[in-house]
Length: 321
Image (cartoon, rainbow, N blue to C red):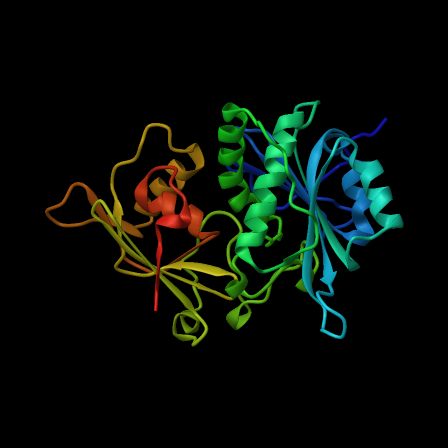
């Protein structure tokens, strides 16, 4: 019977995530979301067995394989992804070992619910469909799997999976899986191994959880930066994406209030930023906070929610050309 082997905490537990790494293979990552019980596991293809020993991945799951794809004869291979779902991950992995869907398989990501049962049949179908659409939309990896054609998914399941997808936009990068990141962000999971620190300017790595004021200032002036602007309900903010970093620029304004259903970890992070003096009230305004320094955060989704005090997504940002 599969057991859950000992794990080595990577970082202090947060109110939202538990981040673990295997003591036997540090490039194997396991990320748990406390509220939803979503669990994401990533590993180099050679270390897949480390993930499959986990009890959470003995049940229905969705998965993504990352490797190299040849789109046409004679063309150089490009980063590729195969997205799927399975009732028995160990059996499906054996099938893919015998008939790889990609050349030079590099890594695997497994997604399930850590509840002793895994994903429901409809949940797995809806999540596979959502992941397929999001990977295709991001464009950083060529999709080699066929788009699922499930019909008649219940509205309740679709709503639940859409919420999971917003959480996975945050969880996957924490596990070093960047299949949902836009192509212009420039790096995919297959460019390194899960668990490797992605390269960043001046030898500093971007935060995978929490926040930091230790932002390499040279990043802000690089010619390849992506700049974004958010203007909504009194919030006026500028952000930069470059080399794995998501940076809130000094002088940006945030909403002082927050909704009652905001995730506990986000509420705590907003309080930390206030206590550290990074977010301060604007003189004469009770509803607005101003950023007194540049701040690095894990993702644009996380930044959106920090600024607005709600559970909004990154689509509210507009690119600055």
